[in-house]
Amino acid sequence: MKADLKICTPYNDGLKYKKPLKLVQALKMRQYAENKKRVCAKETSLEEFLEEVAKNKKLSGTKVSAYVGKGASAIVFETPEGKILKLTRGNHFPLNRPPQDFDVPIYKKGKSGSVHYYLEEKMYGHGLGEGFVDIMRDMIRKAGFKPYDMYDSDYFQLGMSREGKLYLLDPECARYKTIFHAIWDKVKRFCKK
Image (cartoon, rainbow, N blue to C red; front, side, top):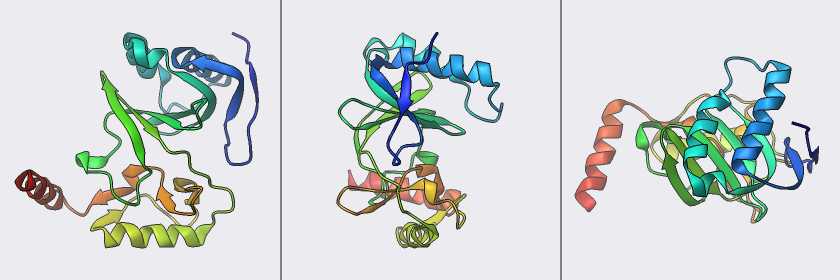
């Protein structure tokens, strides 16, 4: 499989496809590229994503225009409409916590087997520095959560909307303080229904 790519804008570390591809094709292309490079075993294996996406006709046919990046439990693409399509193994929100004001806005979400997918607003990281990490950690604490795996140089976990609002790109970086807090939050939400 030959790579059909060109470099993206400075806002995106990924690669832009010359023409939009179906998601299953983009995943196969990534798998081919990673097999050639022998990517670190600690990163997400694409096998599970490929298997689950291939089973879901609508998801597998979703068009993507760029590969944005990959982490320990997620892979991210950009759609031709300028939205972000994030695939994760399992729910990306720790202990199923509800999305908060500091989380990237989600337009659509779903599940295909063990793979969850989220269609999100595209964020920009150009020019964000360490000071923004402090701001985000404060936002997380004020919402009653604890920052997790967010060190001073982890500004890649953050994004800025076109309107200039700061968002957390990785929901796993904001966790309940204890399991008791998670249970109490679920009880409160259940009682409000």
